[in-house]
Image 1 (cartoon, one colour):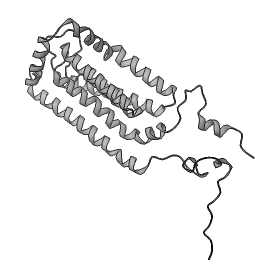
Image 2 (cartoon, helix red, strand yellow; image 1 turned 90 degrees about the vertical axis):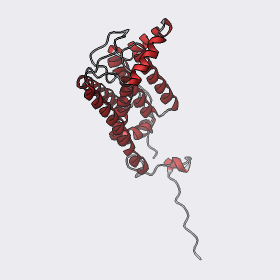
Image 3 (cartoon, one colour; image 1 turned 30 degrees about the horizontal axis):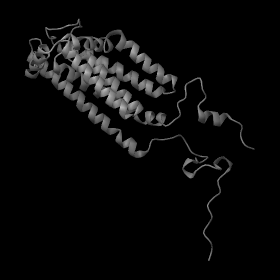
Image 4 (cartoon, one colour; image 1 turned 60 degrees about the vertical axis):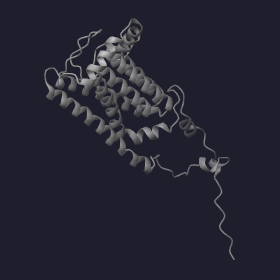
Length: 263
């Protein structure tokens, strides 16, 4: 009886490596597993649903007319805010107002994030983040002009035209969701959720928005970030699996390829 064929011996490059770390010589470019590609469909559905809710809310506000009067829960929430206003909460609310809008939110924070991503060899992540921030801001301005909702009268800050949706809340949600998708860390999702909720609370505390404005901003910002994830999903997945040393250091896989070959 013939003996079973013996397994092929590993070559010089695989010597000493565990079986799961050995890469075939003829291996092509890394592809995302099939289950992951199928799972990309849920961002399209969930993001579209969130934006659809925002669109329906905007339509309801437009049909209400008269400066898009607040809903009953908007008025009840604002009454609670006004009854509990004090100097203790005013300072942190003003800080959130500074952090989430104007020059800091539009230029400083996005450019800082994009610069760091590029510095650590994450070009697809940088492109996805930029696309999410720009798209979110653009949709916010379009809806503000289309809805034309009046802001509350008890404002403590000066804001531009249009109360719905909240640009600060949308920016916070987009920033948090995009970073959570890029880095896939629980603590980033938790910190981003806390940051977004604090931003929403500060906008209503300062009287810059009705509660429904901040809810609309939350759904819009998260929906845009999740929806734009779909076309970037496979590239972000492959990029995440690569080493990310800063640009002034050689990448380990490239260093091995350029090193001396065994004779």
